[in-house]
Image: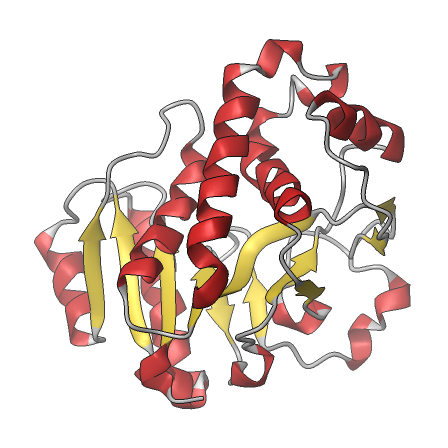
Amino acid sequence: MNPNRIFVGCAVKENNAEYSNLETEYLFRTLDKFGGELANAKKIACFTEKPNSFFENILTKMGVKIRINNKLDERQSFANKINILEEGIKEDVDVIVMLDTDIVVARDFSKFLDTKKIMIKPEDRDPFSLTDWKQLFDYFKINFPSERFHTSCSHQETIPYFNGGVIIIPKVFAKEFLDQWKYFLKKLLDEKLNLPMNFIPNARFFDQIAFSLALIQSKLPYDILPLSMNYPYSGTVHSSENPQSLNPFIIHHHHCI
């Protein structure tokens, strides 16, 4: 795929905080050094306020464009990652790669880019049981998905529930999915106290929960990324994943830079 047809973006969680700036710098430096042709993709960092001039200069030298977005919702800071998708829609590209800032690139992962399916990895752990999930889908009157996956660290059986650190979305599906994702996030936040009990204290996961609801409701095609495309440094990977034999493409260090 022509790198000019690929959009790679991140949302910087805390503007002008040293750790978030450093993480963002490492993300794009490793993309440039180890990402092969992906180093020439369209690169954008989303902020909710103007970054300091020193950091802005670092990003500019790496060819990273800066976008200033409004906060999506004051009630959920993680939701600002949706701004990446909105920015990707504005670009003349074929595929949108959404990355968290606490990620480093270890290898060229372009073979996993897909223009016909949304690509994402199952979560490391799931705080909810299948019964919990059934209650939530019933709450929103959505058919309960039959697909089952296993979480990477706890090997827990779960529904299509994914880690949002690495998301690949074909541009052709982006607008439809964006609308659904924003809709369910707002519903979760607005109706938080009416949700099934176990979801009420877990609002920090609402962006990922909304992603799952949007994916099932939209019926858009999707497939799972392998563990090597979002390898967690936050805990022991389950032995069934054969972690000792993996050569990761993307490492999710969870702020352990």
